[in-house]
Image 1 (tube, rainbow, N blue to C red):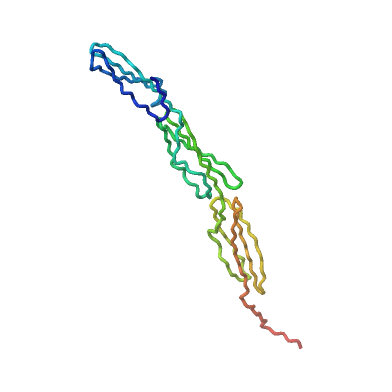
Image 2 (image 1 turned 120 degrees about the vertical axis):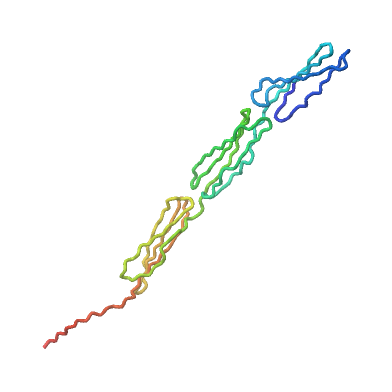
Length: 239
C-alpha cells in the first residue's frame, strides 16, 4: 500500500495481524526505513511488517508513506501599513514564522526607503524560510510625512532703547522635528511714533516641506533725555 501525505495530515498506522494454519501465536514484527529524506520529516517512510510462525516460515507486507510539503510557511504578526510623522517611526515588529511540516530556519527583515515629494516611504519586508527551503514574504509600508511647523526654542525679548543708542542685535533659535537646516527670512519695518519710532523685525522659518512659523521682535527707540542748554559766560556789549 502506498500513501501520499501532504503537509500536516498524518495517516494512521495500520494494525497488522497474521494467521497461520498451524501456529496460533504468529509473531508480527515491524521495521521502519526512510528513503529520499531531502529535508526533515519528508521523503518516503516504509513500514514493513513480517509475520513468522513457530516453524520459521515468514511473510512480509509493506506500506509506503510519501511525506510532501507543498505549503509555504506563514509569517505571524506582520503589522499593517501606516502613516507617521518623521519623528514617530516605530521600531520593526517582532515577526515570527510558522510551518505545519518542518522547522523554521530563519526570518529575515530587509528595509528599502523611497523618496516622495515631501517625505519618504519605508518598505519593511520579512522573509521566512523553513527547513525544506520553502519561503514566504510579507511587507509593511510606512509612509513618513512632515506636517509639523518649526518651533521657537529661544528668542530675544522686545526692548526699549534711547534713540541715540545703538540698535541691539536680535537672536532667535528655531527647531524642527524633521529638517536639520531651516530656511530663515528676516524682514524689517520701521514705524514712526511721533518723536519715537519702532523697529519691527519678523523672522519666518520654513522647513523642507513648506511648514513655517514666524516670530516678531519690537525695538522701541524713545527720546527721554531733555535738551541741555549751553550758555556763554561772557557778554559783549557794543558801544
